[in-house]
Amino acid sequence: MTHSMLSHYSYPTPHGSITICTSERGVRAVAFGEVQLAGTRRPTELSNRCATELLEYFAGKRTAFDVPLDPEGTEFQKSVWETLSRVPFATSVTSGDIARDLGKPKSYRAVGAAVRENPLAVIVPDHRVVRANGRPIAADARGRIREGLLHMERERAGA
Image 1 (cartoon, one colour):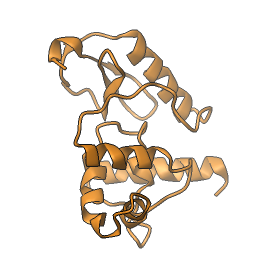
Image 2 (tube, rainbow, N blue to C red):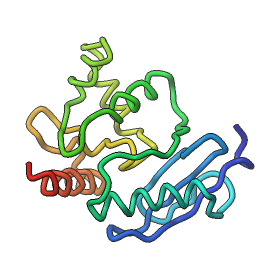
Image 3 (tube, rainbow, N blue to C red):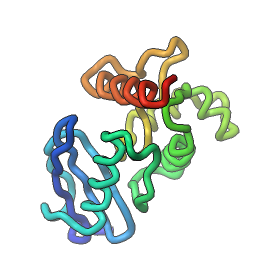
């Protein structure tokens, strides 16, 4: 797919701006902040729909997303992201759990790398992946965002 078929646009949310990149087939990327992603800077019907679903999620009115997805990645990464998409709202898993679900229990490090490369923040809930001790998988700003999202979900679910 060429970049000419991609569009991106930034939307305000209660948690700061989120930039959404779409292709003709689905949402390609979701990133926190106003970032320059591939393609033309303009909203599309799909990016508007995705932004609406994200706002519903942040408002506590949505626990899963319905927009079509079109992430770029290896087949292994896509299998990790697909598995991650099935992790229930307000729950958490480890990279080892996902590796076992994929039938590759020794690939937990590769799973962790795929989680860190997830291009679809919030939509593919990488914030639900934690270390075995329950802490976020990263101690940086993205790790703090992940921890905050999981905390928000657990509060809403009463967990």
